[in-house]
Image 1 (cartoon, rainbow, N blue to C red):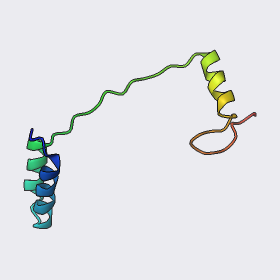
Image 2: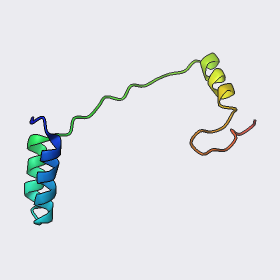
Image 3: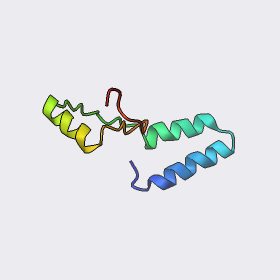
Length: 70
């Protein structure tokens, strides 16, 4: 794979601007293939989970609301 990924992406964008979707897709698959990253699953014990809840003030970090029952 060429070291200059920006050149690959520029070429893909140019192909798309010309309406050449197949050429753009082909170039991406050949020169800039998708390489999935394996997800690492993490499991927390009761003590560690409790420490995190206390640290975060029992606030749901995604919703920004207080956890139910607190």
